[in-house]
Image 1 (tube, rainbow, N blue to C red):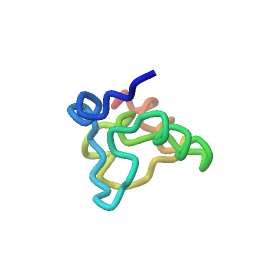
Image 2 (tube, helix red, strand yellow; image 1 turned 60 degrees about the horizontal axis):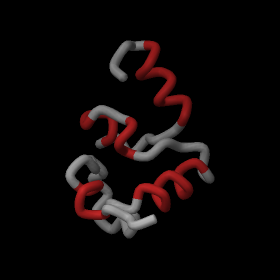
Image 3 (cartoon, rainbow, N blue to C red; image 1 turned 90 degrees about the vertical axis):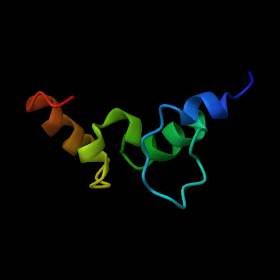
Length: 67
């Protein structure tokens, strides 16, 4: 399977600048799930900017109907 990095970058809202996984969704998801987190693209922009990618934070946003 060919990775569509350029196309993925159009929707990537990750603001962590030294991230080597931007546009490489399979690497990003694997990395974050291994740390009990979700990638930036699962969060609204203002929530992503907190760098809290935890399952718990995501659940709180869902309960607040922000996701």
